[in-house]
Image 1: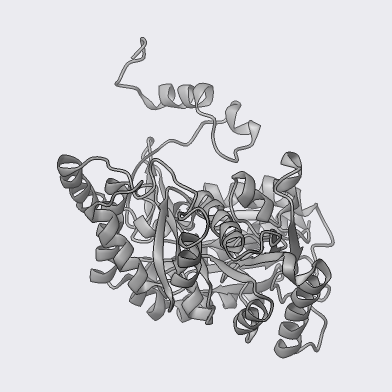
Image 2: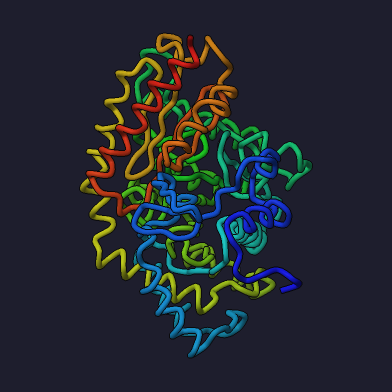
Length: 466
């Protein structure tokens, strides 16, 4: 191995990691003098690093390790058997059993009408595929001018060129512009800081009126699709108000626009249903997925579309969907997903979320008594806290800046406590803490985890406001 010993100690791995591993979305400081955390093994909801230190994974990796870290042997055995039988085959004009079986199972689990499954290797690829399917669908219908997409502010849909254009996170987009043309952004569903006295119905009406006005302004015959997450992740677990999902469907039908549900995070039990669209009554024409389909054990993603969309494309001038990827529908990845879904069913993983989600919410709601917790929001096993210094103003208005608080006090304290969760500053300048744990998290672990977070918030807020 070019002079590098295969028996590397922790210090060697840390040095080599800093020298050669370009880590994803990682600040330059991580390559400096501080020790690099090197994970070694996992069990249940816990990770253990090379020094034997344990961390409770409150983010399920990156919102993906649905069954926790204890099923590697079972999924690995299924993978090994598939590797022996058929280690690779493409879906370019051919099929193989794992892809066919998984496509059939996903079509059965998906919201009504979604029956055609296209496989990718990631969430970004899935959303990129959906963009191309939408565009080709309208071309096949004789409406090639329908090229515009409507997405929401603060949305995150991936890092590839088209998916990045859908993102409503300015700081992620601006360094790579110009991106795919024709994307417009509308308000997200964040309720906190809305006008006092506004009803849920009024909020829903405001959101839908904004979208319809934009469609009319842009020209209905130029709009291709609306892209939404059932629960919006990046803004801090933003749930839709009553009537919003049904209203989107009405608007799409009225103006001939497709509705795309980005279920990369919401799918496979995160909200107590196989898909978040079911939880909120969203009826998409195309649904994208990744992450939880194989619990992150292997890379796999995809999209599921209606017969109406796919048949229109297949009956169009090209007679095919003009898109593909070498590893889309990889037999080993599909085998891992089938094993993962079997484990989820056998272990009652969705039932665990349904049984504990109200307790999870009540436990977090109890944190509202703290002076720094302004809002608790989310569903299922996906919740966020928004932190403030002024509850009346619903703002971080005094003491150190929100960014300094997160980077120098809150995030380090969370990590030092052996917890892994998301701490960030949102688009409105307030700190948020987000929890999206493995779906096997028990009620006892919920209570313990919330107690740790309570202690951390009390301590760091006191230090920030001295």
